[in-house]
Image (tube, rainbow, N blue to C red):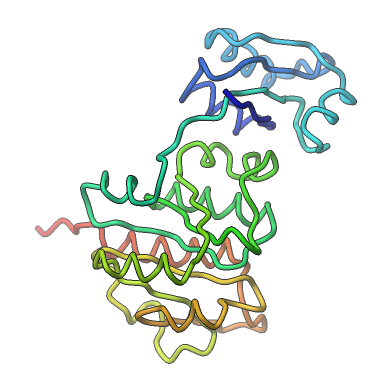
Length: 248
């Protein structure tokens, strides 16, 4: 089975909790013995992980980043759903999907996956071209969500959106010039929220494929939000509307 590298306390801890047998080895900074590291090492031992003392240079070479926090793990890739169709078929409630058009920054993708996990999204979808895949940096920023939220990279995004519509999933895109505010639209029911890259936004064909367009109200000096922040605003508004209210 192919392997991958995870780094940072959150990403590795989530994997130790969710799938401890998939963790081949954990490298830790031999010079760091603060409380957080001691607690992490104890957790890794309880999970049966193989612990290896390493120096900063080796940790950097293993993960390709200086932001490893003294923790790098070699893990087996987890088997996710083989296809978007399989994932959709397995959902027993109204689907909530996040679609990202043209997101190439791994930090943005990682943050989007983390938000998607928090809001209960069932999957994140992106085009294979002009988009970033899940790598070690994405997994680090996602703080474990890269292991819990299915991420599908599709060949033709417009075609995939039309296939979602055939499943009666409404496709709602975000655009700065949309006449309707996010808070004016009913986001209940099967839903796919589409966000484009900051600045350029969605591609034209993606925009045309959407059933509706909404804007995020902006009352300050800035004209737009980072895509991960915008994803959080949209997903949590959808979650708010879809959460049953207790009626006295």
